[in-house]
Amino acid sequence: MPFKLGVPELIIILLIILVIFGAAKLPQIGGALGKSIREFRKEASNKDEKTEEPKVEASKNSSKPEATTITKKDS
Image 1 (cartoon, rainbow, N blue to C red):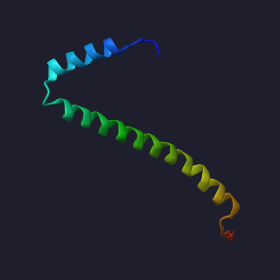
Image 2: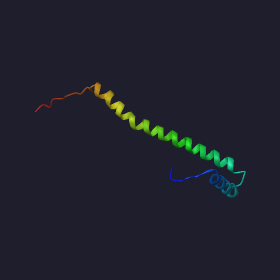
Image 3: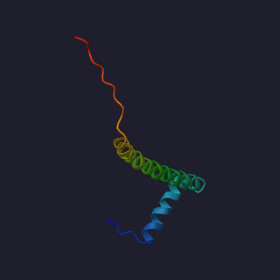
Image 4: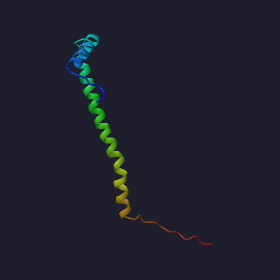
């Protein structure tokens, strides 16, 4: 971790946030931050699943050859 934050530094940061936003807004900010982190993790895991699906489907399709019809053209 590039930043060495100890307990005193964290307390100062929290006090500054308290002064800027006020005590009434802190629960709303915390809830919004938690919700955005949950949604980010959910979408990141869905993106991984979506990129792996075509690989699985391709292996399923390769085991079953598709039926093709050949038409002869009269010349």
